[in-house]
Length: 579
Ligand SMILES: *[C@@H]1O[C@H](CO)[C@@H](O)[C@H](O)[C@H]1NC(C)=O
Ligand SMILES: *[C@@H]1O[C@H](CO)[C@@H](O)[C@H](O)[C@H]1NC(C)=O
Ligand SMILES: *[C@@H]1O[C@H](CO)[C@@H](O)[C@H](O)[C@H]1NC(C)=O
Ligand SMILES: *[C@@H]1O[C@H](CO)[C@@H](O)[C@H](O)[C@H]1NC(C)=O
Image (cartoon, rainbow, N blue to C red; front, side):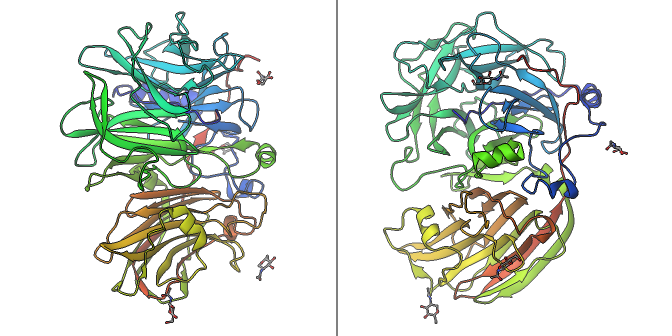
């Protein structure tokens, strides 16, 4: 339940001027209370500088757009722990700098007094947005509800009105478990004109996406069959369903059915966001999977293989013709420390997402706008990294940085043989951590490292031989990330679909004090981690490239930048939510 995302998209391209005025009124020119300077961060070493966060307390879940991007997120106005779920609301021109607005939805009605959980925004044919969200009553019975903007001409969409017809899909619908029935997707209209929406749930131990249809968004009928279900997953939260193009990086609208697109079904379960690809026919509501099913076989496709990337949603950015994914990144610190530092959770850097050229999986890359925060740059080119060596990347703020590196490999004849039992990349990464010498690798980056390496987080690769080529393993080794015993230091790993030595091994890593987002193989495998160093903070943090394998490798190119802070401005005169 601590995991519902709100995410949405709305395209319309007017109102930049009106919005600029709105930004002024919303407080862009006023001083913020977020600990923002390096000085403030000495008291708050884990506070991020360029990831989206509310000034304080608990947040999770994401969004959307209208000449402005709107982010709606799950927020607890009262504490840094989960509870009293409210819809926070922030707006941006560029998905990097944000202004917080008034809460969009507060728990006020019998059907949502227990919380306004996640949902989505749908843009109606007349261009007006509507929110579909889950309300939980005081018994935690979950129903689906509608809300409309009070003034649709307000580009900031500050005020929302709940529909008198709520709940439009009640908690007690036949055999549905009312405590496991939440997170409606954006609705889409099929060729028959009926709206369709998916809702996450669980029946008889099967996780599933219920499919509902309606001609007016008020009266909904459950489709006999769910869109898809699985006995291996447990409850599905935050389902997401959208088309991607078969070739190219452009995104497509929320619902387009052509032979040039394939559909992605994502579900959040067991701490991760998993997806499958397939063909969808709205006429019959059939979804034929083309990949291995959730948790079947050896391929478990995840957006991100770290622990901390959950309840994500995508939206189609009509202005830039791209599909954007982002997710809630929770803490790995203790609950007591979350309360002590006064906040918990943040939003990942938004990522553009498309289908890989091999057509088997999704590829993700941080949105270009984030590069506007880059300042001092250091470059390393054509440098040999011999076995057991490392080089420091100096001259940038290593705790607040963006790093891109690509490695060139020699012949891999001496690479170790991949054992057939090595099917779990995470397990392999924890057995063969950054200190375990191999033939080809470990090599990669050491980030948030302290002066004498007592603290260090390694993001690295290893290459193995198998019967038909090579296997590339990417790891995020947190075992030495913090001297603190009580924080979660589980390591994570993924196999990356690249073919060395013909293809270079590349890594992009965004470092922001307590969060590290890494993109291997140009975005084919992503690993997000939360780390809580005590020595490697602020100016004490260091950055290295290393090679701890037998084979010497070459850094073809390494570019690293200090990152500026994003401007995330609180609303100075936020209306008090009802007590
Ligand atoms: C508020 O911001 C302005 C301009 O950025 C600055 O000159 C001023 O000192 C700030 N005031 C406070 C109280 O921080
Ligand atoms: C927040 O939620 C808790 C537990 O549901 C409830 O006891 C409390 O009254 C709520 N706080 C406010 C200010 O609504
Ligand atoms: C690394 O090289 C040493 C010395 O040549 C050799 O003994 C060892 O087996 C090699 N390790 C691997 C994993 O290939
Ligand atoms: C590393 O530095 C820390 C802090 O200065 C110190 O406590 C620790 O003993 C040092 N470790 C080693 C191995 O030198």
